[in-house]
Image 1 (tube, helix red, strand yellow):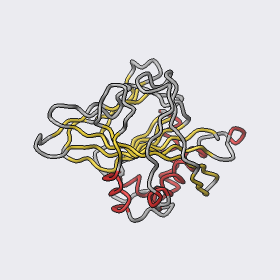
Image 2 (spheres, rainbow, N blue to C red; image 1 turned 60 degrees about the horizontal axis):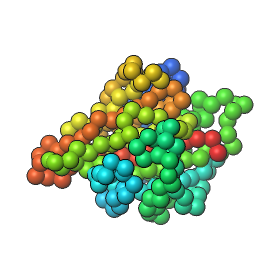
Image 3 (cartoon, rainbow, N blue to C red; image 1 turned 180 degrees about the vertical axis):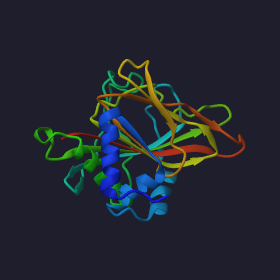
Length: 246
């Protein structure tokens, strides 16, 4: 089966986002979008998830989440990394961990400057710009980039979204699967603003399966993961990029 061209694929993605408020992209379609902006050296990029620090801010006491964080400004196709800063969400959007400044370890320079991340950020901005009326289109987007690893063992479920079904308090959310190792579950569900009506559900199962979400229109959440083989390491690696008006 032939993958659609970049313009055709972009038109389909933006149409679904406009209609439904979210879209799931299988890996071949994500790759086709990212290659337009120079996706390369994926193995080097994905290997960096082996070098994340434990998230020390989990109000549930869990030590199952590892992460790094960085912020960027995206203007047209120009990406600029910002000075390292804390991640902040109000408790309106994150009742579990919100309300405080959280200083996570910065994304490594080699990854912050990586061609794969540049392709992801430029693609995200392109999609956001395509769906933003000209009169509201920002000069630049503020992007927050999160590397996440959720670990699971026989005694502890790994919770990708410990805050539950939620919105992030931004304009757009982009989630890219990096790797699933020896885990089951991790189902993403999308709900209407009443938080009761489920609009869709899918599993990011393969590297570069992706989900794009309009944060104003839907809630999203992911079920806990657990090991398939309790005697082997088990984890779920994702990259989350959020965009909001600068």
